[in-house]
Length: 90
Image 1 (tube, rainbow, N blue to C red):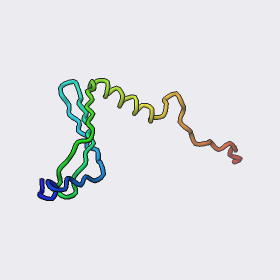
Image 2: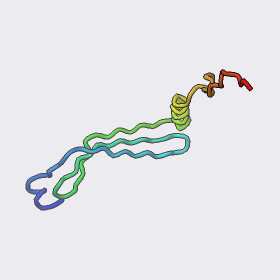
Image 3: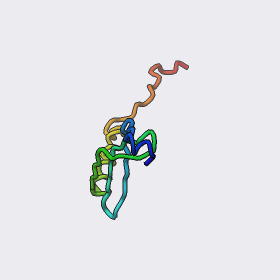
Image 4: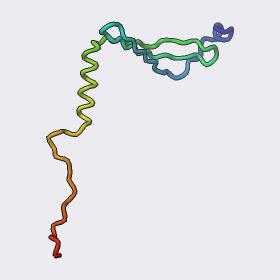
């Protein structure tokens, strides 16, 4: 902390979000922190923190479901080029 900040207090700017993802065995720990940084000395202040623990299998299942929603359904036939309807008069 600088001398100026110790006398006048910190000058915190806009908040920004920092995300951290860590895999621990069959779990995923996702931490989201909202921070503010002092413009004068660079000191950081945590304004909010959220930690979430998810099962790795459920996360993979959600990703698989999201990818299948983006792919076309296999029941729909692919469009074929139109064949020439006029017979050869030769």
